[in-house]
Image 1 (spheres, rainbow, N blue to C red):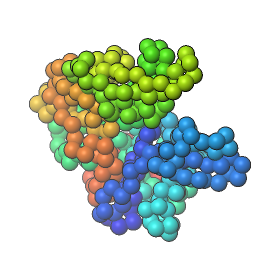
Image 2: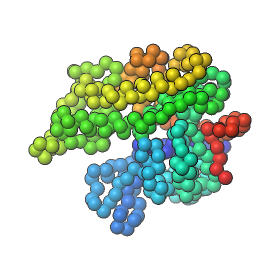
Image 3: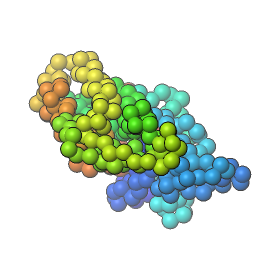
Image 4: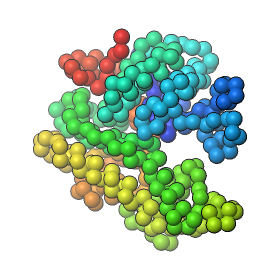
Length: 339
């Protein structure tokens, strides 16, 4: 593995990059800000994220990746290029790049990801399915004929898969994840309290108050925003129980998706999963009480991966060393090269 090899988890909310043997070298929001008058990129990542809701009309702050899919090719190319220049000391190094894609990515979507990496200056591009990369990053041995289940909850999509013998046996992807939960919180505050809040505030509320297992009325959080009735700044005190009501439907949509994958799986693998448990990765794995809710609802032991947020990105870096075992003998291998 070369020190210039780059692994990219191109997520809806965050982009995480690994480089060579250094591990994770960058983890920032997948946001780009540019001047519409001069068409110049002003900022990417955290600096661009801080501009959301605070930018004048001529500065556009955009998410080039929506629900796990590239929505704007040019902006995504520019964003990836800026991040690669950032980690390489502003010298284009023409690296090999592995990029993660959702389990149900289409050929058109795959081509968009590959073009983004090529235009960013790579000499060779590989794609790896997120469930495979997450398992590798969590140090799970997926080479044996034994079933392992992964639930990767990102910003735009939740990818669920059963993996055995280096391949995905059954998988399902839904567009209910971190961003959908944020939108549910925003809608709840509007309908219940007539309070308008932004994306960043919803994220803070989710992180600070979410409890999906045993929510309490006694634990509260102050939410600040604009009153829709008066048009003035306002604040509201909400409890864990109220927040659970706001995000309950999203949580149980994820439960149903997990149930669907189990129903579609061979019984031998389901037996393995009963023994091994289920592995949660991604930022959504850190939602308070989610692992306990899954265990109670589905009767499966649920484990949260160590460093769940960076699991997928770490897997891309490790995958360079496993290229031969992932490629050999697989006609529809989860890692493949575009020539």
